[in-house]
Image 1 (cartoon, one colour):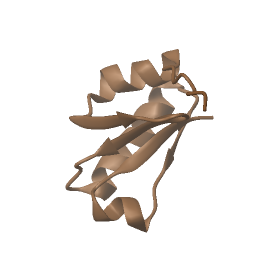
Image 2: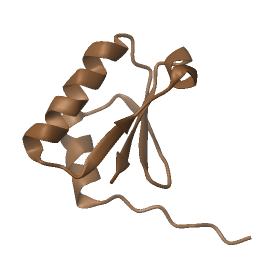
Image 3: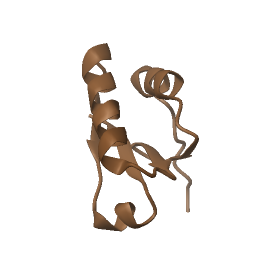
Length: 76
């Protein structure tokens, strides 16, 4: 079984540097931000930052992620 190398795109790196999440996990298509207390405000801030900087990223989340205070930021 061959492991797939995960690389951080320039847009994703700019998001990480600017947003500065406390905890995140590197994934195949992006990152998973974890340990968020106020999900609505944090996701809104992340979406606004992506739009303001013109990054080619999308936010994804679901009910399971809500249980541990997380959401994903993925490359388009």
